[in-house]
Image 1: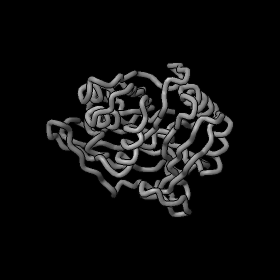
Image 2: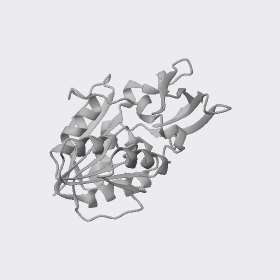
Image 3: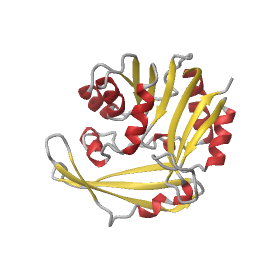
Image 4: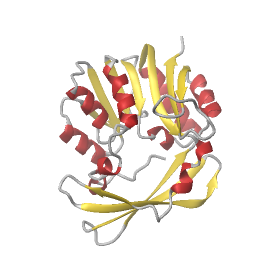
Length: 246
């Protein structure tokens, strides 16, 4: 199941305000700048590749996303990047990319085992010899979903300054490593609240290693936060740097 929370144009326009540039973006843009060819899977509004291009990246940059509304924002932001509508099942590659990224916890929208295996095989096929796949997933031990409650309201504004509010609410019970939740948006642009439902998968480090190994990918480094700290019980993230296995 793909997270469609921002598939609508009016919602996509709020994404960057709700998710401002942070340490994670700094982490990824450094990797992108050091790789000649890059594929960003689930590129969203395109800010990562746009930042790299504006910083002088001279090589091939391709952003892939299943939400047309997100790509509208990306194309407006930076036309010198190749923005492609689709997902890892809709395109095929053969070693074209030195780096494949999945940012913004996009990896967690791969819900089923076969969906995940298919995606990882596609990533492996897209990587050049020795190429790297870098992504992050929330550490399930940290239970981030416990804070997804209606009392935690986030304010955002689009490029025109129109304000909206958003909050999450978990649909109970949590089933294994899958968490289903609603996102509610309110603001003057709508005559009633806009509610979307999403499901994310929270895999632990051991499960991630199993899926990656099966796909021909080897974990090179793993961090628990954007400062490159270790993966501990309380670490918020599992940030994985994997290489194509030889």
